[in-house]
Image: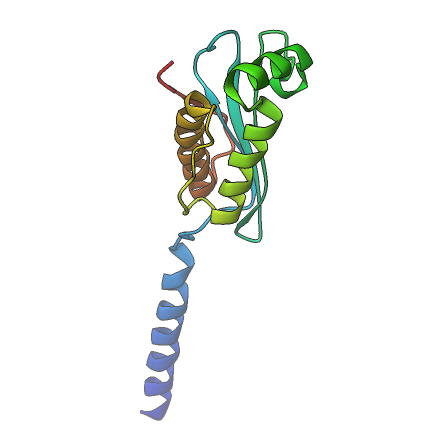
Length: 148
């Protein structure tokens, strides 16, 4: 009788233990994830790439590239024109928005930077999409309609 009880307890323990194995994590899955605008806007296609390690975002890159792959924040002429007309430039606002995503770990609010409101709107949509990819553990590049 004692043996039967022990076996039943052991089996019950195994069932409880194995029941937890099918659960997926609710947090961010380790890896690299990218969300990219589905269309070019004024010759640039914006993207956000994050790296997740230990369930936390450890790096964020936000930028844009043209059809030849040239990175927007490297374009000095564009930077000078935008700085004089809008008071900011890609090297500033891309780092500003990326830092906020990193700090908030995809959960915090992102503050807009004056002069970069169009990019702010795109960044919000891209960051939501890239964090969702990280939650699912889906490393495929997700294309996002940024509304431009």
